Length: 155
Image (tube, rainbow, N blue to C red; front, top):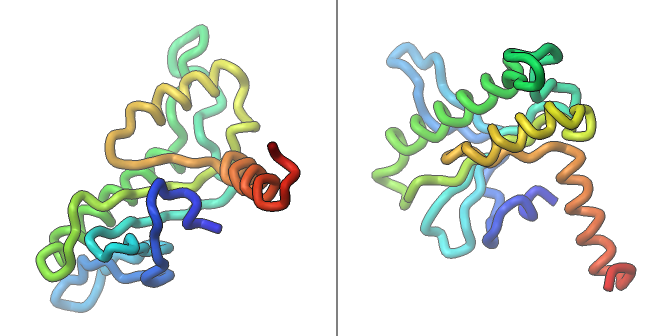
């Protein structure tokens, strides 16, 4: 199911994968929810999943009338992904082919946003260079579309 988030064929390398970062005291290691490898074995992808209950944006405006800030959960998730990617490249990039691994963050529900929040979310998401942000309802919609194509319900 999760492989359909990627624009290319991937294979699950490991769930709850260690991606590096431990200190000499064997602490502070980074764990990503899923580590994928593309089917040509020449790159990796990191997938971090939060819950559908996580807020995407703050409930009140940052600037009136309609500019909203990202939520702590979303900005924290983005930074977590960036940290995992950086650590993975530094710790494993030399021994494993790794060319700017793709990162995907699955979080929240877009349907919970009002129209002004949805605009702010789309602007924020469109300007993320290193992290693809996908909401749970978008993932469900994509899977529903795939199901309809496979079963012949969608023409």
